[in-house]
Image (cartoon, rainbow, N blue to C red; front, top):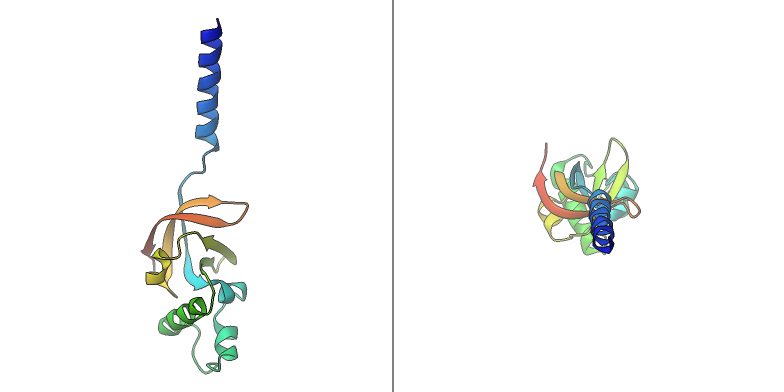
Length: 125
């Protein structure tokens, strides 16, 4: 009887863990720096840095601004403009190639911290 009870308890624990584990998903948005993402645009930072004449919607300007802000201590994040949601990215190396551009980030989301545990990133249109 004890063997059956331990077996049943073990099976229930495995089922609970399987349902509790976060599922991998894909999130789309702009790979932006944390400073500009708070403002939902690069415009304010460009003005602050004396580059207010630059078009904040220009892909090259977005890339330059994102890279410069990360050099100044910012972090790469994924910004979804439609929902105005900022997702922290636990991997800071993979997003560098997509700075300022649209990307699809695959990973698991920690809802409490809005952090995506990144498994892959690819460009998006």
